[in-house]
Length: 349
Image (cartoon, rainbow, N blue to C red; front, side):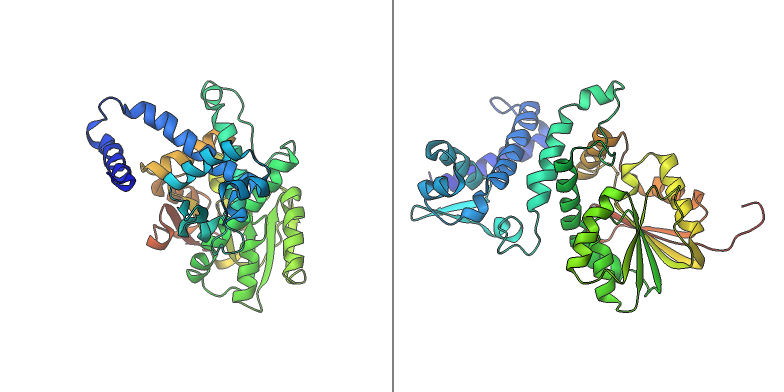
């Protein structure tokens, strides 16, 4: 039988585990614990050692370009082929479409090199300590000043990639603002996209000093330093300014506990004009595989979680916003997009 038949049969057997459980020799718990770990490790390692940018080539050519041992690299290349990132044609390894789209730097239209090679690698390390976090140990944190510089730079680069994927969809959902405050907009990806969409908008990014340091370089490279500036520090404690008719919080609230999240929303509201609009984007923490696994990752890193639509709606309302609307756009599968208005202040609020 051809190898493709075995691959399809294997996928059918693995898929059946979700319904009936796997018989021997494929027990579902073992496959979940082993297959996911090895798949992640293979993709992360291949990205870190430069396999995708060394393509195309024979095994020996790729080994020379990446500084790897030929016999050992061949094992990795075979695994990447089984995962459909590579294919072998006439003795030469080539990138498949899924690799060309995100992992080959010269062809990527949706770059994820930093997301896979750095952030995913850090996630893998952190998840090994999940048991200790569950038992009460303080999570390592991802936004604290003692986070290693290499981890921080990789994280910021990954956020720049991930924000680029959603920026247009978020902008499409917004009315044209005059002054925009982007809370937690660190790498500046969304601010840059907003300035290119609306040539006369003024953007202020509120984020930690380390995030600002990374973002300022990207903003300068985009030639937008005169239109985008930073307010550095904890958005709940520093002066954000006022008069903003739009505020955005993109992938921010899952990094903090509920009380802190409401505090950030309240600080954002205080900076806005009456009738100003807030727009936010979050992972959907509802009971889906992606949502719950993302939530568990945030818990391992920061003791936080991804919020459900109801939880998010309650937090935004508690901060004083009105007309809260939470959507689940098809183009942003797995994410929640929320909108609300500042409204008027009333005595006692």
